[in-house]
Length: 343
Ligand code: TYM
Image 1: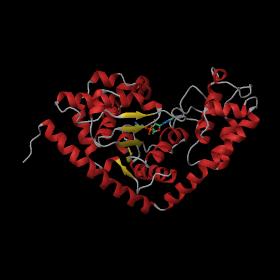
Image 2: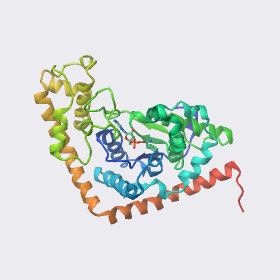
Image 3: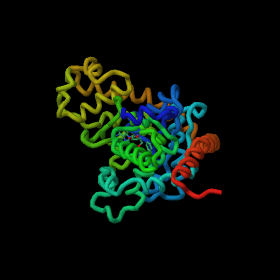
Image 4: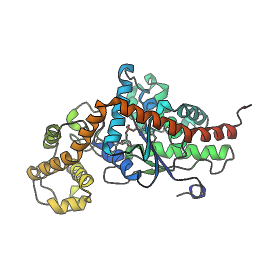
């Protein structure tokens, strides 16, 4: 922790978000959502559905709102409790876009040009991508700092964006001689689900954008689909080894072991101790049973929320009010610090 972080005297606050761009998968659940549920018991938490981020690539206006409700339903079904944590859609809190503009004037082009996720998403077509996609990490910094959040639970793929958020916070504090105004937010990445890989290729992360649905387990999958996808998951001819070193060079096996660990609470070595010497004919059904046992109740609760959109909408509207109440005074201070006119 830097000296500046130590001197920040505001309250601890957790912020995170997910894009409403399709069904959530096991990576989203183990990498982030499961952590949201744990954190809400001991921290003030703000969980956003980042629809402003989603529109950096084309989204059909006819389905964007329902996609937002889907993610809200997943948050609630996984156990995020609206009595404990704020859940709201990003576009319902105008401060995100306002602070993102101020941060556009703080962040440097060179910082953004180093962002690997933009390079991955745009490939050879960067000239044809929206300006929003390029600027995405600045909006992400604004999301976090609009609440002066100190801790951000995310998967490993968000590490670089979190570093940028810290750089922006630090530069704002320095440029405007406002020491410790913004905290330097700490990513909460560690944990067994930080990087869940594709079931078809253990060197690629599990992702919504991968064309093969067999590469991921979705939170909306039925028990049969989960079992089938695990049965079909790529492995090799060997058995489960007894040491972590022997997992090296076997990325698909390592991934299944860490998924088992994330579900069961066992360490990777604990999983190996339990299954060493067994073949996948034993391990895969055991993993499928565990996955179904944990995910099916979530899917069922999610379907209940989806059948009652009014209830979800009420939670989102209350959440937006609560989020605005935290954000507005912080924004007012930012305007003051930056010297904007006021009556
Ligand atoms: P998004 O919507 O792509 O993913 C949501 C969360 O899921 C995590 N995740 C994974 N974790 C482990 N293994 C995987 N295979 C995997 N795939 C996804 C992501 O790390 C993330 O935590 N930029 C963010 C959304 C965002 C945000 C924020 C997050 C916008 N503003 C402010 C934190 C704070 C994103 O696109 O997440």
